[in-house]
Image (tube, rainbow, N blue to C red; front, side, top):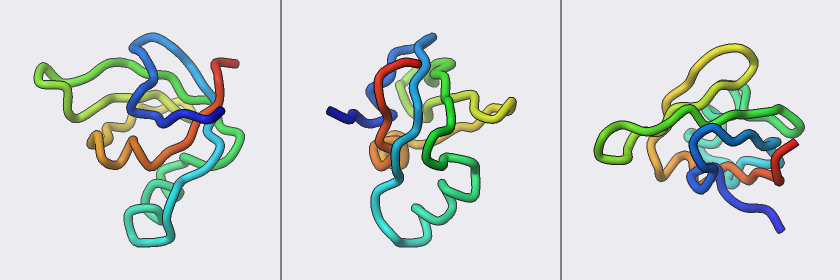
Length: 77
């Protein structure tokens, strides 16, 4: 069963399955490289837990928790 990116523990990796929605935020997430089949790793979070930092396609991105909740992932690869 897929889970969302905001639940990926620090240091763990997973594979992106899908981005939920078809609004501007979903389009921006796809443009940032969060596409089906991409490996992603959780690097940590800000002191208060938001934003979250990830590594994908060799670069780092920061996402708000509500954005990360829209990204479906599979178990670590």
